[in-house]
Structure formats: structure tokens, C-alpha cells
Amino acid sequence: MAKKSAVKAITDPKIFANDEWIVRFGRLNAGRGAAGGVKRLFRVVGEKIPFEAIHKVSKRLKAEGIARNGVYVAHDSMGYARYIGRGSIFSRLTARWKAQVLELKYFSFYVVAEKKHEREIETLLIHAAGPLLQFNTKKKRLTISAGSLNDYEAGTLFFERHYKKGKKPKRKRQRHTS
Image (cartoon, rainbow, N blue to C red; front, side, top):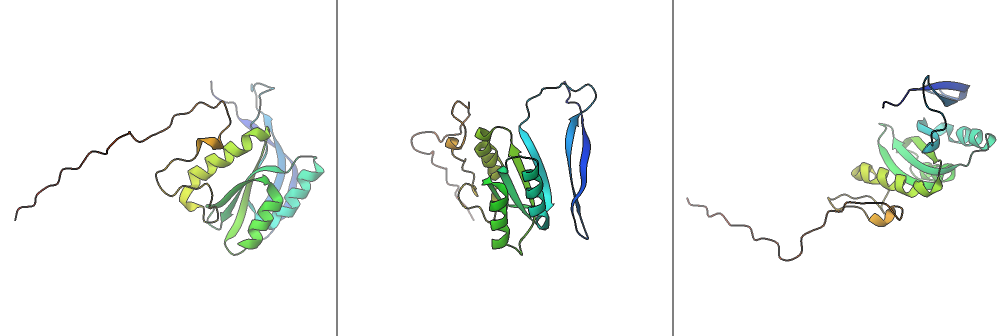
């Protein structure tokens, strides 16, 4: 069954504005025929917001009484993810921005409804973004090696690629005749 479209309801049309962007705040309401009471993965999302708006966005969430912990992404001027993390969203993003003020332009954040899923979402994003992440050094993979299954919640089913045991087959050498 297809998911019913959500309807945007803007409650604050101008949290922040500069010469290029306006940042708005609102809620996604269930569209016509959508089932109510559906469990959400995210409480709040914000994607590719200009870093100049970070303090106003944080202040608005605080005023709404919403926790400001979750998963966050710092993007460069082309919108590419350069750093991904989890925890205190706005303090960590502000520190990252100060460290790479010339490289970073936008941020995205996801306040996860159930904290236990933050680590898994962070890991998924890091593995997907891989080589683009200039400032992540711990979990990114630049080779074909897989990430650690220990980054996922206990009880999760998994498939794992594993090298066969024993000697690797020898490759036949081709003789070149001239």
C-alpha cells in the first residue's frame, strides 16, 4: 500500500533569512486518508540548512521543548556530506563549523524518536557517504571492507560477507609468445 502524502503546515515562516535563503519551521501533518497513530522514526528533521542559522534553529527547538540530540551531517558548498556524527547536535555542529569554517556551508540534523536507533542511523549514513567524508576518521570505509556489525543493535538479523577459509586459488600465468 502506498504511503499517503504528508501536508506541510508552516508555523513560523521566517526563523532565519539571509540574501540567499529563508529557513522556515513547521509540521508535517497526515494527508487525506493517512492512518493516524503511526510510529515515526524521526521527531524533527532539517536538511541542508545554512550554518549561519544554527543558533536560531537550536533556540527554536529549545523553545518547543524538544531534545537537541540526534544524528547530524555537515555539508560543503556543493551539498556533499563531509562529516557525520551523533550526540548533542548543535554544540557538535558548531564546533565542527568553527574547525572547518571555510569548507562547511550547510548542516542537516535528525532528532530520532527512539535514541537507541541513533547509532545505527549514524553508521548507515557514514557507510553510504564513505570517501566523501573528509573529517570523519573512525567509521568510514575507503575500501571494499564492510563496517563492524557491532555498530548495530543487539537482536538485529544480518548477512555478512566472509572470505572462504584456506588457500586462495592460484591464478594461471599466461605465457606471452612473441
